[in-house]
Length: 211
Length: 211
Image (cartoon, rainbow over the protein chains, first blue to last red):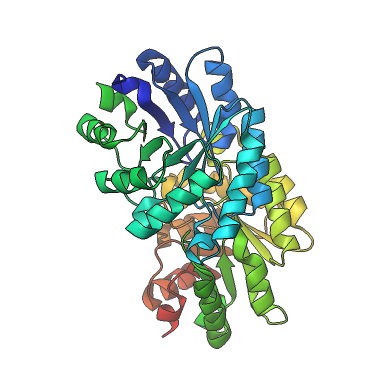
């Protein structure tokens, strides 16, 4: 098993995060050798300047946390993230269309974003599992895999916490690596999620988790 | 004083809102003669088709609720909102830059978005008052007015509720109409905010407020 630090995406997404706070989490990512640093779009180039040449992945959220904008905007934002130095983009699938039974539109949206991000970056697709039934989690997971995404992510953290059951349902429905995210604040929770099948832990409490 | 219904932006922004739910709030907006209907970008054209030719304003949020994307993306999304039939765009000011002391960048971002939205639409700028000190609310309010925005909006509803004190501080700092938003769930709260100086009420509880 990989060491805990090496699977953590060290995350800061609050809108009032300052440049100083972004610089701090980059220093922490270097010190604790985290997997990645996950920030809002405006900070991607700063993080790139601080972390380029290291092993740490630069992760930008896009159309976050609602996932409810037009495909054209989502693609353009993902493209800018990669152009600014991001290695990975974390984006929410279009849940409004998915819940309205318009799965083909939710799928084609994701396919276009995958095409935009590849081959220069990887795409994580967030399904916001806390808002979905088990059956919906299964169908969303299949859809994300069919779209060609690289990683499936459980939630944004704004609509409830991840739990072991969600990981279990996702794991049975698709073969993608799973990023667990949402309410992970201590080592025990992180370890239990990894034991259940999560490959990556997204958290704003990375330092606390490994300390 | 205007009747209460006529100042309410009837709002549904949850990511899992279905087409059926969007259609329902449009019917309610017609029935109760609300001021506007506020939705996520993907639903703007549907709302336009249901409400065009009526007095009800079509409002799209953009880069919501974080306000932390690039100006280019924010402008493009606001432009698409207007092109799809929105009369107004509600967008969060770039709080990361504002809190980092980069007010000139936060200001120029908003000026560019104002230019994009005018003259075919109006721009509301959200300052997310629950996250700001009184001094910051004052400075943010001045900045929003200087940018040429049409309306100042207190918050997104994702970071705490609006209160009378926030309205008071904003009112003293700028001359823009104020949209109060965040945690407004009943008539008493709505009326007290209007009495304090709010011109528009944003709420997902519009029907309950007027019933």
